[in-house]
Amino acid sequence: MRNLVYINGNGHLGKAAFEVVTYAKKLGGTVTVLATGKMSADLLANLGTYGANEVVINRGITGNDDQQIAAWIASQAAGADNIIFSNDFNGKAIAPRLSVRLKAGLIAGAVALPEADGSIKVNVFSGKAFGFVKAHSTQRIISLLPNSIAPEELGASCAVNEVTEDMGASTVRVLSVKKPEGAIPLPEAELVVSAGRGLKGPEHWGMIESLASSLGAATACSRPVADIGWRPHHEHVGQTGVAIRPNLYIAVGISGAIQHLAGVNGSKVIVVVNTDAEAPFFKAADYGVVGDAFEVIPKLTEAINKFKAAN
Amino acid sequence: MKILVCISKAPDTTSKIAFTNNNSAFDENGVQYIVNPYDEWYALVRALEIKETSGADVTIITVGTAADEAIMRKALAIGADEAVRIDAEPMDAYVVAAEIANYAKNQGFDLVLTGKETINFNGAQLGGMIAEGLNSPYISIASKLDVNGNMLTLEREITGGVEVVEVSLPVVVSCAKGMAEQRIPNMRGIMAARTKPLQVLAPTVSEALTSYVTFASPQAKSSVKLIDPNNMDELVSLLHNEAKVI
Image 1 (tube, each protein chain N blue to C red):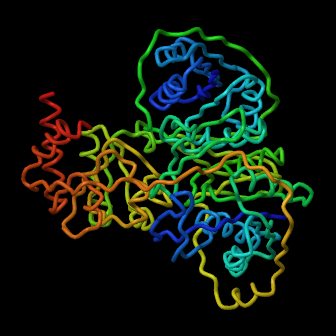
Image 2: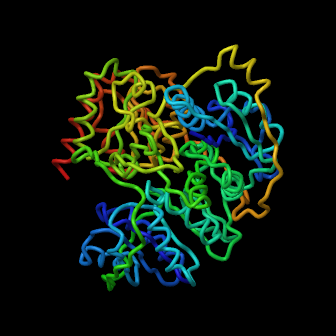
Image 3: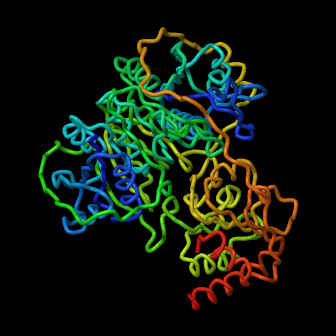
């Protein structure tokens, strides 16, 4: 079995990259990482630790142009059985192109390794169900949802081969990039603290942010809160917002409408804080606190700080 | 300007999701279908805004059976000019994209819009596949789209931020929240939709690349463990020792 993994070397080399390499290794056979961007060869060599046999980085592609990247991967794909992407913005643009180019079935949003019958579990109905998808082609493309497999350090660093292949001019010109400094990207976050209308106004988000910062968590919100402008749209989790699957999701003052649950019920552990003991969210929660957020959250933050200091 | 908006049906967001035939098919019993929200709220409405400000012909396209004409009439009622239905089961994203690309190839569309994903299959595959079929640039997960003559300026989601990009037409764009505001069709629109052209075309693609073998519902959570609001140390200890998440 020959597995290819694509890594965009313009971002940071983090969990999402380690996850896809671990996934490829666990499929069996060899793992070749195809990378593009500016990332140093020394850094990329670390992917060997997670199971890569070699890394090939094309310095000829500097941006995120999915047309250039798909064309390059296609030129490297002869003999590959699986081509694996992280299901991030880049994977979502490149993998479908590659599927058409190679006539290879794309299994989008995979959350687990293949089953015995070769099908792969994916999230469907916005997290309200799972599907098991099979590809009918000889080559298969898999895009893996973040936080679906734990990265495993299995070996030593590997060789990095730097090539420069010109894939033509990019048709997309990047004018600027807006990135909030230091914030943890929501889809990658392992811990998330989220709040809803129960907070009564945007001026009360300070306590949510301090709980998040004590935990090292990302912040999120429910749809009504984003719609009325208390919080930015990119924080909205739910069926029509971002779907997340963190290890811990703490929901404060969110009743738990079915559309909100759809975006978060992939979370491993859910804690719900709500004044209303009848809030539907408690049915989806592992731990519940029936109480006033304005009293509970500062106490929880204090307890977390105490725990962090002792551990 | 000629704009093609790809729309798909999706179960209403409040639908209970269940499966039938030994969990091999979605149980449509009692399910109300709507236009997939990303296709309607963002892709279609932005196309109509462009039509209103700078003039455009807006065509909607669906790959589906006659039953899908109800949601197509709704899209026409919101303001699309004409509709095309490729008469085929949408077996997988590849089939749908190939049908749409085959149709669009010789029609001279400047802009092809899709929703960022459907709320039933969440694959986010369609736009990229159409773009490859048309050999066009593709801007995925765009939250803002402005037309300046032959150029588009867009904002699109990247990991942990937003990228502002410029691209020349023709182009394929997948649309997300922020691009436009939802519209409710008015009575005049609904009346007009009845007589707008809806063309039905025979399919040109036969082979799907993927299929669903089976479906499963998530396991129900065991009942919630309630913690005394005055004992947050207990919650922290449970999260550490029992749940092992901190």
